[in-house]
Image 1 (tube, rainbow, N blue to C red):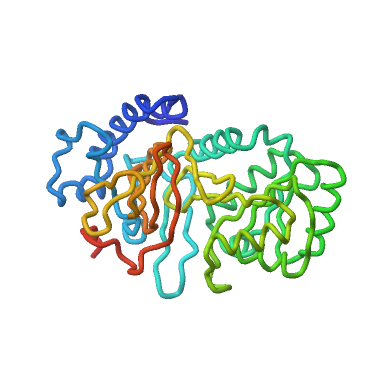
Image 2: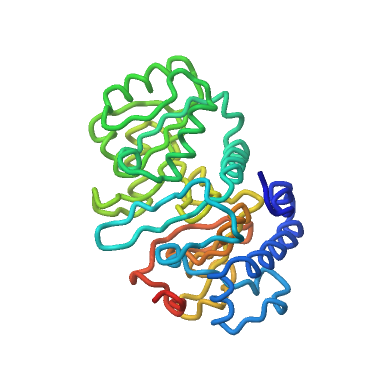
Length: 329
């Protein structure tokens, strides 16, 4: 049940003009009804009434989700998503007031990039996510598996022998298949097994999760391409604090759904946005994140291209985003 009328417009966005209009509506709604975001804007010395376009909207540092309850309005939470975190760092917590917004976001995005879910077998190799509670990725993949209605869709923990057998069977059936896996688990698989399944879509969700040494994308994808017999490796760009994902169908170039956009900020002056082709911090506008905050400054580094696609080039060396530590105490 959508509580704010603009929610009905989010998934109807078809153009940049639509996006800009709805983004300003969402900004004004969140600035008025999200206490933490409003205080952040006030500390920056920005007058809400003076924000006239998306380039003037301030982005909330993602670290706020670790120390504040980021909620717009007085809505109760239907579910709380939590980041993996470590013993040395607090977990981000995302209080989701309307899970239907998340479901419509990922189902619509998935259909846009990959077609009707009922025609696809979904396999998931996500052991570290399965072993903890509160993963938004597990919520999404579990729902996609259910909606695929394919008898062999499912999760795999460490039973890679069974996964190899199922992949071989699906190949023989010419079944459209997507294997979604955390990076280190996909590498573990190809070190033990080799399969030549050119039609398979291998989607890595990123991150070694402390299990392996980090690798540059080109080397990582080369190993996975060889191990699975595919020409490209797909990737998903999402996070606990968002309700939308961007997808790459190869070469690390990500594209967003119509209600999501990425901007690049200057790493030394976080209120300044950079032009296309320049490397900086990734800011995300996720309009589906209506009842938390739609305007988030991530800790990822990247660059944007003229067609609105973008690349992820790494993460900040320091734990806090420079110049954006207001209210973090």
